[in-house]
Length: 402
Image (cartoon, rainbow, N blue to C red; front, side, top):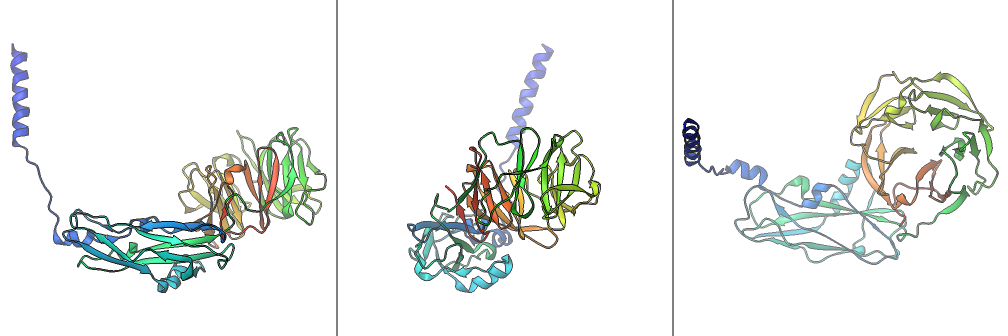
C-alpha cells in the first residue's frame, strides 16, 4: 500500500512540473539580426569552385544562389543583382599565390543577372552560369571567373567574405584521353615494393628480396635489362629517395629502423654517414621534401624535421588534416596527395615546408595501384604490372584520366 502511495505521489509531482513549465521563445535583438542576418552565396563558403573543361568539349552548366542568413525569413521581397567582376582578379591572385587570367567573356554566359528572395523565404532562385569552351582556351591553363553580389534592394547587409563565388576553369584533355606512354611491363607478379630511384630510375624489390634498378633511355622508356643493386635485402620494407645522391631504407616492424645510403654513379648503394637514423619510424608516413623530412601520424598531423636526422630529432608541426590520403609525395616545389577515390591534389609548399592552397589537379588515378614522381614526370603502375608515364607533368592543369 505504501509503495502504491509513493508511486501516485511521484506521478503527481511529474504532472505539476510539466504544468509549471513554460515554452520560451527567444527573440533576437536588432544587433544579432545585423550580425547574422546577411546575404551571401552558400557555394562561396566551400572555397574556390574548380571546373575542368576541354577546348573541344561541350558547354558546361553551373549555378549558384543567394541565401539570407540569421534566424528570420525575409520580411519583404529582396531583389539581388550579380555579375562578373574583373576587378577582383589581382587581389585573388595575390591572396592565393596564383597567376590566373580572367576567363574571356566569350567563354561564359550568365542567364540574366537578377535573383529574388521572396518575402517569407531565405533562398533565392538559381542563376545559371554556362561555360563555353573553345579553341581559344589554352591547354593546361587555368582561368578565373569571379561573380559577385553587386547590389540588392533591401537594407540588409551583405556578408563580404562570401559575396563572391570564384570559378577556376581548368583547361585540359577530354576525360579518358590524357596522353600517356607505356614505358615498362613487369607482369602482375612483379615483386614486393617499387619506388623512385636516382636520376629518374626505378627501384624494385623482387619476390626473392633482391633490389633491381631500372634506368630509362633518352625517350624515358625502361628498355635496358635491370641491374641488381642489392642482394637479399629481406629486412627492408620500403625506401624514400632524398635526392640523386641519397636514399633511406626503412626496415619491417617491429624495429622499423631507418638507414641512410649513398647512391653511386652506377646506381649501386653504399652506407652513408650517419647510417642508422633510429627505430620505430613506422609510426609515420614519410615524405622527403628538400631539406626536410615530413612525418604524418595516424591523426593526419604533419611535422617536419631536418632530412637525414635521427628519429629523436626535434619536430615542428606544419599542418593538420592529412589523415586518409593513400599517397603523399613531393613534386618540385609542391606536395601531391592522392585519395583512394582517385582524386589527386596539389599543395603549395613554403620554404619551411608548410603546405597551403590545396587544389584538385586530377581524377581517375585509382586506375593505378601506385603513382610515383620521376624527376618532372609522373608514372603509374597498374594491376597488370604495366607502368605508364605522363611526361612533363604540370600542377597548374587538370588530368581527367577516366
